[in-house]
Length: 317
Image (cartoon, rainbow, N blue to C red; front, top):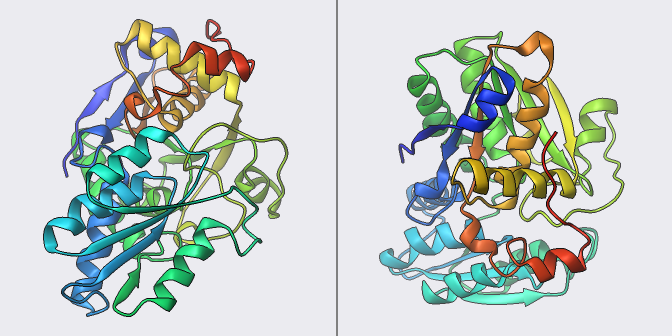
């Protein structure tokens, strides 16, 4: 993959730290999820779980589905994607353009069998020659980040990294990167950035999956311990609100010419908060710029939509 590591100038200057973002929007499918998608397909082929002419099925907020279509369709696989119908329409359109079949479901709790995750599993069970990618529990996800993302970060920083900060969707990124970096230098701090509505914050703090509030972010935050997140070696966690995420999103657009998606903006606000602490002055931070803001034009980059959500961008402080 080998995506760029970008210095976020405005935040580095504001904090006296070196703050870098890994530009995952450079991947062929436009997001960090390309890494897991490619590895999942390759491993499934090697293990003969995915056979010629077969169908790849996945439940996703969109980006993993796009990655599976990018890498799966050219190989002749049918790609069926199950999604909640409240995700950004841009992702649905990209999936259809790539030739994937998109099945939309009403948002509901994970415990409800109508949840898109369970519907993807059901589809794979009911259709012959179908392979369920199962990004949450499939450790090919972890493997992708342990073997590519982690080493890239280490090499691009020449090992000069003090903090790795990232949100959690499936746990694959944090699982793979935290393990690789800690093996290289156990002193590197690994911190989860978590939105409201997710249970990870309470799990890391107190050992229980408990949540409060909700979030407009897409593809991050979970309410269970996935196989991929079990692999994570995490030191701490910080919670970020939608307002803070929006503030950072528009700050980056104005000061750094970066138009990013919701999870990337949330990641950078978390980094900013940690970097502002006096004891962290001069430290080096790396986080993930998971995807580009063009996938969210109809939502977080639409002033009318933001006004409806009472999320008016403010200056970061």
